[in-house]
Image (cartoon, rainbow, N blue to C red; front, side):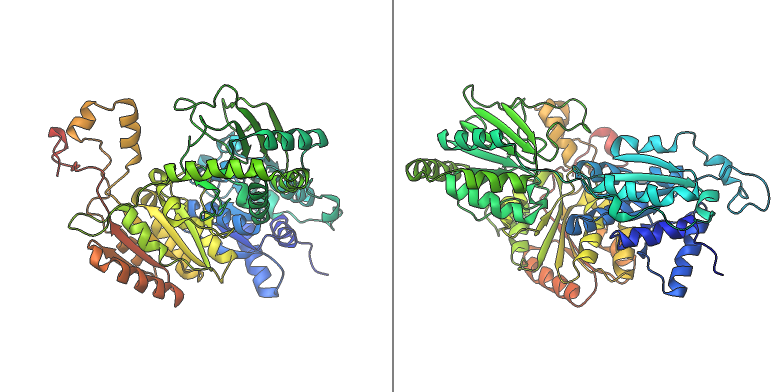
Amino acid sequence: MPQPPTCAERLLTLSSELGADCIFTNLGSDHPAFIEAFAKLEAEGGRGPRVITCPHEMTTLSAAHGYAMITRRPQLVLVHVDVGTQNLGGSIHNAARGRVPAIVIAGLSPVTENAGIAGGRNEFIHDLQDAPRQGAIVDQYTRWTYEVRAPESIDGVVLRAFQLATAAPEGPVYLSGAREVWEGRVPAAVEQPSDWPTPEIGGLPGRGVERLADALVEARRPIVVTSYLGRQPEAVERLVALSERVGIGVCEVSPVYMSFPGNHPHHVSYRRNSLIADADLILLIDVDVPWLKSKVRPRADARVFHVDVDPVKPGLGFWHYPVECAWQADSLLALEQLTAAVGPDPEGRAERSAWIREMKSMLESTPQPTGGDGPITPEELTGAVGRLVTDKTRVVFESPTATELIPQILKLSRPGSYFNSGGTGLGWGVNAAIGVKLASPDSEVIALIGDGCYQFAVPTSAYWVAATYRAPFLTIIYNNGGWSAPKFSTLGVHPEGVAQRRDTFFTTMTAGARLADMARASGDVEGYTVTDRHSLCETLDTAMATVRAGRPAVVDVAITPFSGQRLGAAEGDGSRG
């Protein structure tokens, strides 16, 4: 008679049944039960998630994040005890802020010391890695942090983990367990997945629909501000329908998804703070930071409403934007309700549309000139990238100082064509692109990455995984010579300070680095470097052909440097290049 499965094996098979296609893992000494379960399932043809081994934990959760953005299903992430959990770094912040479901599993140091107990302490590191509060490393970023204490509980724990990860607002869950527990045998299942449904979130309450619909019709300068509405592609279509019926301008701020077609006449801007002081009605839909209160405020008579899957942001510290009404609601359902409730108003719509056209012409920037003898500009590079975009393209974006510029030039208009982390943990982009490609193999994934974000991404890990597991994508590095964001922050506080006068910001850390070579050295990856605009388009075309042929490619493009400071021996005297 066959033995019952181990706790680790049961976790894998049940998770697969619940929709986890992959387990992204960096394995350690606390994972013998999982390694044995992987091998057994492979040998016996059992059902389990595909094992994606990652050289660094930043890759594990960021790739799972990208996968979940496409499928909306949580994937498994298996990491080491305290040190592996710490190596998740900014990826756990990104998953929390981006509201993506994920199940992170970590070992715990074993506690038994008697020989003969499967999984008990038998290595010196088990003492050193026995953190008293391991879950506290990540618990403020998770929907649930829990220790599996007995093999018999694993079904209920896994089912609850998936339920909490997928309940609105979605987010990561962190499970841990000691080696002895993972090795324990599990009796026949008594928990049924059908008994653990994900709670559904509804639309607006009846009075809310009437109140908001009336306010929209009464307004003459209404705008919508959104960021992550596009996580539901159907919601984009509903927002377009409402905008066209009423005459509403739409601003996308730091878009996490493509939430409104960039080429639509009512798409007003990607610039944060746009029209906030001009609008007489502001409808916030699925957005965290609609404007910066230190820069702009709504006019005194403006009516502000908020519809969001997460309207009070309990995962953030101090957060508040004054609104007349706020509703926790599914934006797709809310938009359907509003579109049905708003009656024809031809005269009002014409007036509102005229205002939108006026504001749009005022806000749209003049394209930057190209050519000449100077460095390639970010605008010029983005224009060249636009040539590569097709109806199969999915853009993964990570360049904090270009969150307005690049979307404004690309003007992507297909739901599911654009992804950003939703957080501020740098290094997400090239790792998330792996998950996006694995979840949508027929798509052409283009990662647009700042050079700083590229280095934070542990590229040796990311590109080894991309090549090994046949997830080819194109990376285009906007290389301005270092981390430009600290310069912008410094100038915001000290606009005429010593750092500005002497051009000394101490962040020119990619100058001279062979970034494409990092990827090339990691596996079957092709790397290119562009310093001359005359070779830019040709190189991008060649790199895209490489990806289409099945190999990852990286193009390191030197753009206008943000600073001339040289770090190193001369930094003490403030030397600049």
